[in-house]
Length: 207
Image (cartoon, rainbow, N blue to C red; front, side):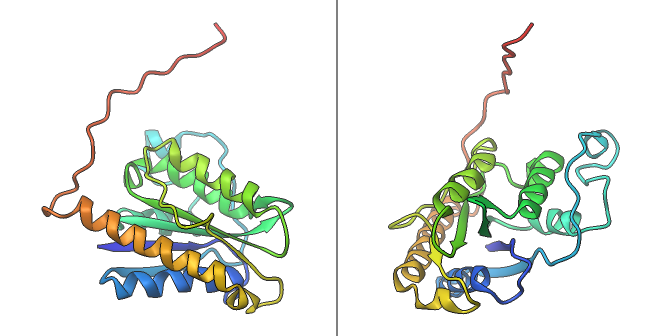
């Protein structure tokens, strides 16, 4: 089983990476494979609702000049996900949100029903709002949100400071062990034992 971790920070080895690395190392101790992919610092496009991904591109975004489709391909071979973000103005990194929205819209089948956890890092405040924002998208795809002993938040400003947040690091390890436990239960008999979903019913409130 493999867990794909997405570092939504433009800083390669900053505090978001520290939180994800703590998670990955714990998952590997549980016998699971991990890969951390960094979003990077190149421009990332937002969704333009063109629907080319649905109509022509077989689940790939029409924009192929950023990291979105690379993550989309890796997601098809992953059993669970961890998304990490710094906190900007009480919100996740906008580039990460753009990627998440494009991934889930264009290739939702690669994510649906698979466990996910969201990790947020901040200097002082706003992390709980950012954390809740990140969870909402994945809840729409029936993805179990893996929890911990506290919200999966770590604190740090200067690069490396998150290591000093001992409770935050413990929270990451606890989340990782919970994720490993859930995955092992799901795959205990060698199958992806997810519940059968009803056909989606959509109700519009404006006629």
